[in-house]
Amino acid sequence: MTKPEKNHRHATARDCARYVFACLPLLLIVPCIATSASAERGYAVEYEAILEPATGQAKVTLTLEQATQLLRSVSFRMPADRYLNIESDSTVARNGNTVIWRPGNTGGVLRYDYVVDNQRSNGAPDAKITPNWALLKLDHLFPSANSTAAIGAYSTTRVTLRGPIGWSIETPYGESDGESFFVDDPHRRFDQPRGWMLAGNIAVRRDAIDEQQLSVASPRGLGLHANDILAFLRWTLPEMNTLLPGAPRRLLVVSGSDDMWRGGLSGRDSLYLHPGRPLVSGNRTSTLLHEVFHVFSGLRAKKGGGADWIVEGLAEYYSIALLQRSGGISDDRFRKGLAQLAEWSAGLSCDATDHSSGARTAAAALVMHSLDRELRSQSNGRHSLDTLVQTLVTDGPTVTNSGFKRLAGELAGRPTLTLANCPG
Image (cartoon, rainbow, N blue to C red; front, side, top):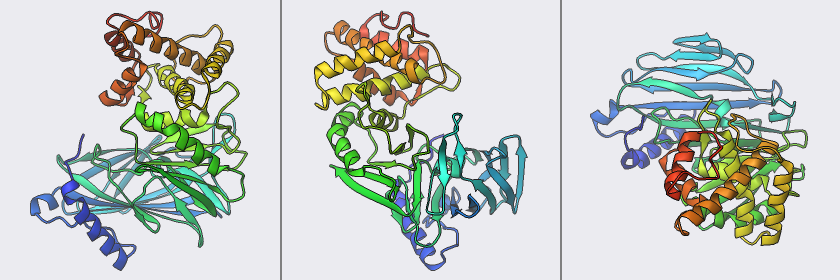
């Protein structure tokens, strides 16, 4: 549910919060709301996480303050193997991987310990804490939640991250003071921090494209070519921004050690990239651009709907197409890249799947290339795959097989031949 507009009060609330925290660093922020009507609808949330390399965990505290019972309950997804020692000064209960917290009428405190290290199915970690640095997602440190709140209620939310003395902390949130920053998601009544974070003894390189702020961060001495990444992004992002004009104003790229997941993973206004990944692969695709497409478009397949081939196919296709458009590869190398994708994915097409990767994603990228040509031909150049993607982004982030097929047909003026045998 969309929360009420708060731009008219945001600067005032933020100034007040900074004042309170400057005086009482551990005190919960209290919104500065002028009218009693506004005060009755606002509640304050403070997230705090302390990274502890010695234990491999983070000590997390969520504090809520409200004048009346606006926020009634919050349901978190908290698997028992990663979220330990959950306790509260009010009611909290676990049901499998779900933890339900019911704060008191005027607020409450929820505490838990979070296990940072996590391994993917192939055994490679995608989150890690060492004596010198920690790499993880804020989405997991502060897990996804569904809230029950009074109609019209909204939150003023602040996040504080701490580590050992001397550690630096990098997140996608640009407006911060020291270790703290504000979170404001206009689409949610219960704001939640999201995106990748890197903390510790780290090196950070920064650049900008107009008003778009770019940051590349990695643990010191682990070999990430940050300047190469920034140069590559400055070369290619103008084409990505043309395709997706509503792209975020900030992009953070983080990396870790060589033993971690050997690919890329997207997050809110941020992405993870293994230090050994080339900026352009042998088949002319780019893992970096693939993940940037995910970040900038925000598109995701409907859960359980089998449309992941669409989202991954679009990301893979544009990772090579935008290289061509920007002049990073020639038309000839573009054609040879498509030929390599065809050789890799021989016998595969656009089968429904919730987990597309490898050869299946290569096949999906070829479907997107064919669909682009068909849309341009059938519309006499008025529409293309770009048009379809921009419409998907405008309509909402969730992609379905039937919706994708229907929209392509509307742009072409008839059901498309490219998608005739595809799901939906």
